[in-house]
Length: 160
Image 1 (cartoon, rainbow, N blue to C red):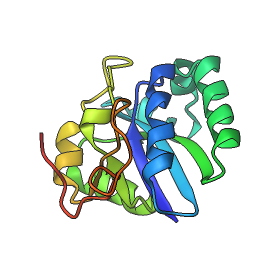
Image 2 (image 1 turned 135 degrees about the horizontal axis):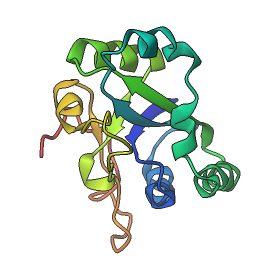
Image 3 (image 1 turned 180 degrees about the horizontal axis):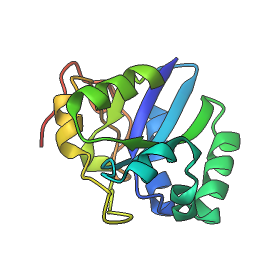
């Protein structure tokens, strides 16, 4: 079983990579975690209420939730689809988050687009590049599956 992290802005188009990901993974079970990264607030009140926050869930539209349900039912290899929010900006915090989520790989930046949701959103590229986890590459729509183009978990994270 592999757990793949996909940074996202929760736009329904973020789900377009999942069919190709499922087609190329040599696993019987796949866990997918969609994540958006936020800088931690300096406000003491915000920090105290962090565990009770639900404001960020307002950014996730019904079309994204529906798309996740449809993909899960269409691809039996998908065991779970989760939505998470990461709060922080340091590599140590990000690595702790990845460990807690048992992430095996992160979708390569060529296959996702993550726009800011608000002023506290951060670009995940730097943290991902330094995380040390392998990048997961997938086929583009025009490519055919062959031994040379089969999606793989790369041994080293590709930095773009």
